[in-house]
Length: 75
Image 1 (cartoon, rainbow, N blue to C red):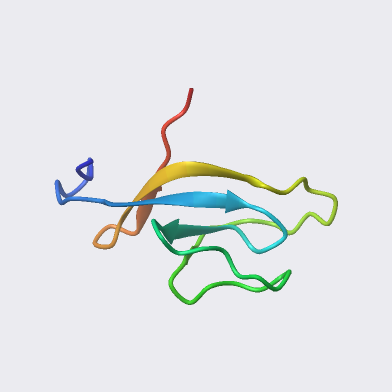
Image 2 (cartoon, rainbow, N blue to C red):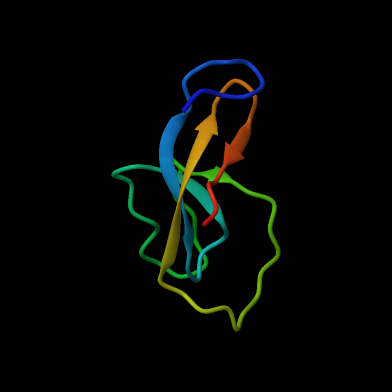
């Protein structure tokens, strides 16, 4: 997928929904194993912590390293 802002190729990855801060992660990088921690390879997304949030879901998303945006397709 190309970035709609700069036209460069975007990195394919995913957004994980678990007990860690919300991050975009590149394909092949698993979320942190320790609750409430982040992976250095991840890109932080603006989010608020919610203790009662369900876990175990992820969504495919693309990140542009140049423009610092993440795009996630919807159903």
